[in-house]
Image 1: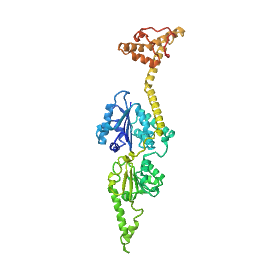
Image 2: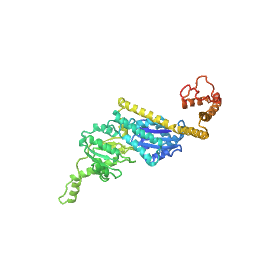
Image 3: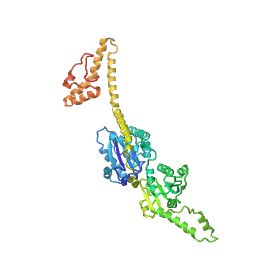
Image 4: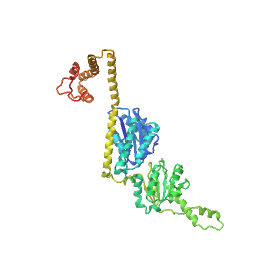
Length: 473
């Protein structure tokens, strides 16, 4: 049985998403899988606007998953330091066919803040890869996520939803357009060196930005800076560079604020002190002071207005920065509120592809669900046949012997179904037997026929004279 829990920008508050995102993503799959004995697999998709847990239970369809789900909510609540009831009230639960349809829609970008965003497909794929690494994947979850990636590619290649340029990063820069007079003259500080940082840099360069420097919170940004031909800001330079930037874009997974009011205030003080020192009268023999002044890069000057774009979850930028003069903050919550509404004509075809992929996934799953039964039935029939062949081995190979063997085989084959017909009919469950007859052999008994119990008492008709009202055995 497949289940899913989904907390996203449509059904969950930003505060709950931030709490869930603050948990260690590396631990989440095992946390979910170990929450209940019936859970045999778990894949967690955690991004800046959603938290999703996909679960396989070792239970047949129709068995209540409530106990397992309560256990998952309890485990998540403990590590996220939030009430389990609060999670239950905000997180959407799905099971059965709805799980595949939801994941296929997510992977195709149809459930994103920006319809058709390209980053989510990679995040879904990497979530499965991580589950494999930590050993929490399962055969059915493998099949689910592989089909999700296939559906995402089909939507991207076959519909307008797949057009390039649709992303949260680009939406944030679109919203910044009214604040930026000329992107080519804008000084930008990029805080972060992950995939979102790469996407942000690409989007900035598309707008003509050339003056970009990068800062790594972890101190491991040299490789990113070198591969993208960017100057790397050191920890000692960070406050000053933050105060000099006209635009700051943050996109890190740090569990703490990377920019606060104190950061910018400290950087502004450094710049003001440098200007004061430069304006001071310097004596002719003050070579040490002259050396210090000449080493300070005084251009470009501190901007009058700064735009801070926070793409991190949990937040990278402390909201207290808005208390400083000239600061404007765009965080994910603000960006989400300004996201364009779904364009029905764009997504209609994509959703049709998702629906088709869901039906195919479910159909294949149904086929897989009876595979063991088919194998068992074939083994049962051939075991009986092998026994009959062994019984008549060595006897005269005549038509009479062959007919007798076939009649005996048919009797052995029908013995258990006939006994089951009697047992079910005595319990008032004859309809189950009749429906099974139709499902297995396509036989529909004629109206007003004899009872099932009577059928079980009859002797077999002569070979070749049996007539079926529909289909053939």
